[in-house]
Image 1 (cartoon, rainbow, N blue to C red):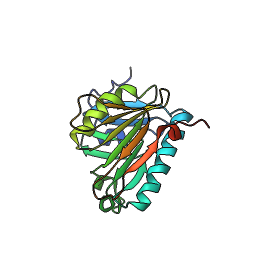
Image 2 (image 1 turned 120 degrees about the vertical axis):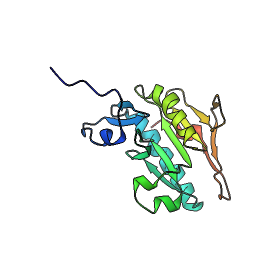
Image 3 (image 1 turned 90 degrees about the horizontal axis):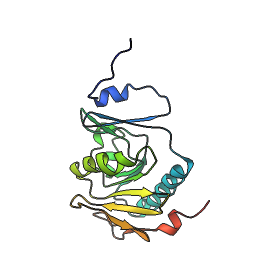
Image 4 (image 1 turned 90 degrees about the vertical axis):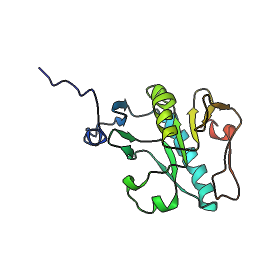
Length: 182
């Protein structure tokens, strides 16, 4: 007879999970497991990372990072955003535990992550004070744009715009460029 799975997971328990190709996260004790993403997901993550990274070379208000990551706001929270921006002072520490302020978070939907990205993680990011959260739907070619005050997202079909504090110019990316065919 096997051991029963825990009903409540901690970040340390998730860190001890096997390196088996799945992504393990925990939000308030709820274990979130997603398999390796589809190639289209990775293309979108790459395009967003490149575009935001080029912008941040000009506007040095943050550093772009991508999953895998180890962002934790407590013993029962560990998330791995697909793409995120942290302030330069936190990035310079090169220590996950010191990266607490996320200026922008982007999750690209996968079949296995839709519920977690749209609900569980969105609420956790809002509670952490993430000022802007994008949920990218690569199949529908849309992006849900969330701020902490929103009860419902703005659905973007044309252009993503982000103007972080301290930046002279806003970041802007056409969705036709983001979703262009290979």
